[in-house]
Each structure stands twice: as structure tokens, then as C-alpha cells.
Length: 256
Ligand code: ADP
Ligand code: MG
Image (cartoon, rainbow, N blue to C red; front, side):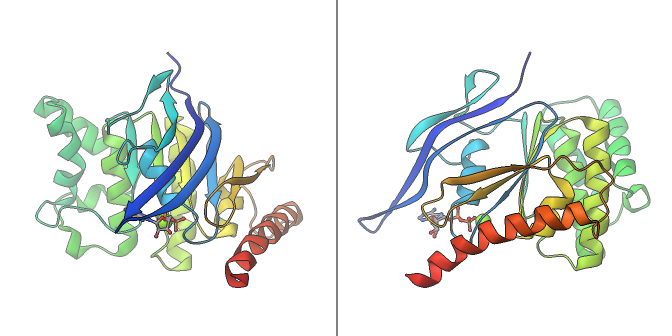
């Protein structure tokens, strides 16, 4: 069965202290099988809000979000989420962190072991199965978080600036690993970043959002074959188009 995601006229209004704030305004888009979509937009334009709504962590104010034709109203193992901050359980080893979702799903121990081994291998952390998060570098912790999310076999991976806290070199390596995993696992990925280079390196489509309230400003298709060379002319051309589009939105913030 199709597990395509359809976002239809979704708006989000937050109310706090008697004031209301429109964070997301009438967003419609689709995420089809095996697509890698990046979202870029000025800070505060509702990117995280949109991801949380797709994850079922935050209710929509109007419109609807469907997965395989069914409305998303609460979190489910079909939808994986990787956050910017390290969200590992500090008291669990790397292996036990990856195992966590499988325990919740009551997967039998032997099968859990097999799946944990598979995903630790995929992110290159087999040797660190018994280490604790505090013994790992930032990049290794994010790889653990990715393995933990993949282990429950979600249909879509939502990633909210997952590499934002990493140094440039580690970030580049993880981008390449993520593309490898995406090829192998054929999952849909929706990836938020404020780094245009990252978006151009990764995505099939880049969604540029407007300044708050976030709307879709434009969607740019990237048809450059992978692996992409970060310095190639085509990559530069697309990067400049996106940067210009984004810059117009950031300017609006400073005009206010
Ligand atoms: P982004 O991820 O693009 O930086 P967010 O989705 O985090 O943007 O936030 C969009 C807007 O909604 C911001 O103005 C933010 O302050 C506001 N906002 C986010 N979460 C809440 C909340 N739980 N309650 C009230 N306002 C919120
Ligand atoms: Mg955010």
C-alpha cells in the first residue's frame, strides 16, 4: 500500500498568553515514495512546527495531513523523527538505545539483536555497541539516533536540522552516509536545514519557505545525478538560485 504523505492546506496557529501567532499558513505538498526533500527557510518560519505536525506530535489548526490516505493524528512507528539535539537515553548503551523502539514494539529478543546489529553496522558503530552516549562524539551520537529511528522501520524519516550542531567535516561525512542509507532503505526523507549547501547536496527537491507565517515560496527540483560534487558548476547554479530566494525572505525579517 502506498504510504505517500499528503499535506493539504495545513495552517498552524499557536495561542499563548491570550495572543495568537500564525506559524504555518496554508501549506500543501506531497512526499512520494523514496523522495528526498529538503526544507529551507528563515528561522521562525515554522519548519519545526511543520515536521512536528507530520509526526503527529502537534495538532494542525486547519487542513489535514494524510499518510497512505489516512489522517495522521498521533505519533506512530511508521514515522521516524531525528532531532537536532542529541536525544539518546544517557543511561542506555548505544546498542540499547537502538533497541529501544523494538522493545516497545515487543519484537522478540533474537530478532531485536539481529536488527540492532544491522543498523549499527549501517551507521558504522558496531564496535561501539556497548559504549554509553557520553563516550561518543557528536557525530557518533547522531548516527546512533539515526540507527535508533531506522530500527523500527518507519516509512518516512523526518529530520530537523540533524547535523546542525556538528562541525563541517563530520557533517559532510554524515550527509554521504545518509544518502547511502537512503539508497539502501528506499525511505522517504523530509529534512530541514538552514544550510543551503547541505540541501543542494542531498535533495531531489528543495522547498523554500517564506518568512513567518511560513508558506511555500517555491519548490526547486534538483536533477543533478549523485554523487554530487560540491564544487561542480551545476551545483553552484542551483545553490545560487536557492540562496537568492532565501535571502529575500531573511531580508523581510530585518525590514520589520
Ligand atoms: P523554525 O523551526 O522554522 O525556526 P518553529 O516552527 O520552531 O520555526 O517556530 C515557528 C514560530 O512559532 C516561531 O515564531 C515560534 O516562536 C513559534 N512557536 C513554536 N512553537 C511554539 C509553541 N509551542 N507555542 C507558541 N509558539 C510557538
Ligand atoms: Mg526549527
